[in-house]
Amino acid sequence: GQSLEQPSEVTAVEGAIVQINCTYQTSGFYGLSWYQQHDGGAPTFLSYNALDGLEETGRFSSFLSRSDSYGYLLLQELQMKDSASYFCAVSHTGGGNKLTFGTGTQLKVEL
Amino acid sequence: KAGVTQTPRYLIKTRGQQVTLSCSPISGHRSVSWYQQTPGQGLQFLFEYFSETQRNKGNFPGRFSGRQFSNSRSEMNVSTLELGDSALYLCASSLDGRRSYEQYFGPGTRLTVT
Image (cartoon, rainbow over the protein chains, first blue to last red):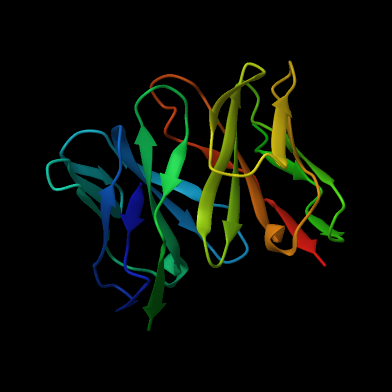
């Protein structure tokens, strides 16, 4: 089977740095994406890693280790508006754009 | 560019009925995927269409079906509705090729089955 595990909830204070981890077990792994979803909203794409290492996009960075089947999303200079659910998602080899999503992490940013 | 649109936004149906949901992708996107989101199961992949052909399929019963038209618009149909089909149904479109991992989601259709 395929599974992607994330912590269910993370709490941090405004201005801090937070890391959301994702461990995966899947066949035909191609890459790992991260999506943000605010309550009542649609998921929006944040970042993608196909190769090992760190990808930086503004305040957000994402890391992948294919050998450890592990990735994380790093959010810096947290703002209240970052309070949302964050999902990791695996894209697969074999063609097509199917995404298998993780369980999701609810991030709460406090003052 | 206009984003992904889905209609209707909200729907209430009775067990045993069928429902059709519609999705219009971003102009130029030929890949359309459908996902079901529930509090218990999270985001689950239903199927993907590309150039009017189903390219990938998730682990859902045959009551769930879809199609794509020549203008890339897509519909999904659920027949013989069950209470457990109550969920947010999300449609996502993407380019094919190098940036296919970047999917653009619509606002979803909230289906309630009573």
